[in-house]
Image (cartoon, rainbow, N blue to C red; front, side):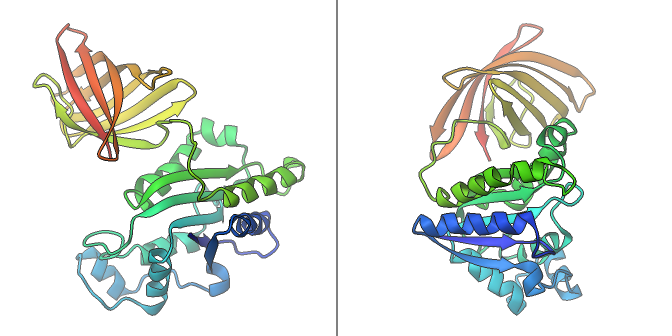
Length: 308
């Protein structure tokens, strides 16, 4: 199988570069292959032309795609997985990688009447100067994941993974202390990239919408739930349709059933709350939760939410 690696770092003398090389060694040692786009070395043009902007802004099926963009799109469609390797700059990917998305994720390829294939995996390997605990506490890690998985890779890959190499700033002594372990980690991620997944069930960074609901319920197919999980604790934000903003908080048990309380503000300005128990079922390749809920006023109902 083949991985398409999009690598973005302005310096050849970087920890990120060495992590990339270890990852590639792992891919090759597993008997798989890769194709690499080194965006800085390629001097990939990241500014959209006016013609490209107008094509995407007006949703035009324009076959005149620039040669450099077409080459990247062909690499994607000839691969089974896509991997992005980069350093975190101000809670984002480097501008050159952002520009790569601006041009390569074009109308008619990545959205609209898209010709982009559904990839088996989408993986992020990024180095960050801050400790993971700080990024998580400030909500920055969640923001990075949401941009990459909730937007750029959303509905374009079957399986996602975010691999963070934290505390890598040059003045941090943990950078050198952890160097060998980080190299091993990158190598193993490459070696097991196409291995059957034994990943523990998790709701982290998974999105759902309602496909059915009782008449007394308020969520609909316009409502999107963004789930998170840490250990046996689960929580989600939800909004859309008749829900302005909602939150739920609860636990997941050994059978992956959910038990939580919820509260939201609807478009009538009412604050509504209740409790819910949900059972997971895989149907037609998608995860669904069959829910039994109860408002605080005592009325009850059922709903089904399905993963997007």
